[in-house]
Length: 264
Image (cartoon, one colour):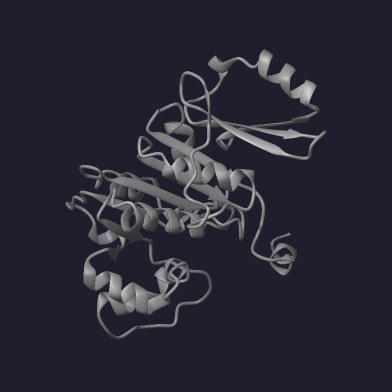
């Protein structure tokens, strides 16, 4: 029982017309998507249920970011919509969840000025054996855990450091977030499948005025729970139906053909 945030239908133009005529909108959740694949033309169309009707997607300018498939377009539409404060982008290996989330956070902060800061949040846990005691500051100790975010910046660590100095981007771990409030911020929760239910509640309740939260993760890669009982999945199942929440599950590895082989 995983809420994936979309329904999918394939058929001829006539089949699609009949499907839409018979579709009971009352059975849909707000911000749930309908993805239609026209077998006559080979084209796909996506629509979002806004709670009243099916509406066309609103995407960022293609010169800034362009989706690779229908599900990515749905993810971009969710994150572009400023009325949706809580967005969960779930997905398999190489599906683009971290990339899309990071780029859309930067889009709102650096391109549109809708918020002033991107806050990257991650639980510092990893696969394999630890490397032992690490010297340095807290930033030195946790820096590599934010590598997935750094890799999405065109200038890498140099751009991250420059953005830190300008106050445009910052990073945090849940352990030190209790008692804090973040206004005018897009909170970017990477690898959210590694958060416990208490940690998800903790980071979510830090949101202040004009702030949003983008969570990305794959319960199948979780270090705490690789089942459908993962807290991130539970969060999506609990929040579905709320107009300020949206979820989409990306199921295609777009990283490389070699990546697909290892994932499978």
